[in-house]
Image (cartoon, rainbow, N blue to C red; front, side, top):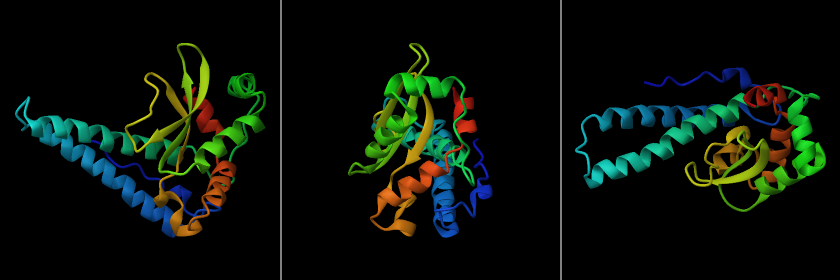
Length: 186
């Protein structure tokens, strides 16, 4: 069984109200609970039935919702942490020409209409980086790629504090990135 992680150290994060963060934590805890519930249900399902198939389909949604939120919360920190001169910065510069160009692309993706996630993903097999739009939780992942920077752009991540001003939320997210945590994911 999975246990929800405690992200309360994020309370007081600039640009993120405690109300919004606490609501987001509760939503995340629901994904953990539903993941556990479905894992228990697997034990009682008759293989090959429609219920078996739909429960397994739903599992991807709940499990990815759990993990994406864990990645999201763990790649932000009070005050942010600057990107170091380590290999990730060099990879970003090789791919986009500069960190600023990567950031422009990442922000533009987050500003698109729709709900989902924006992820800086690392393909370890070819050592390539991609900014990826993930619709919902379970559509758009690059198989085998490691999520490095994960930004939630579902309305629950910003509407409480920013209304429809998603760009202001994205700017608050960008300055809160914990690049040390991101670099550890490489």
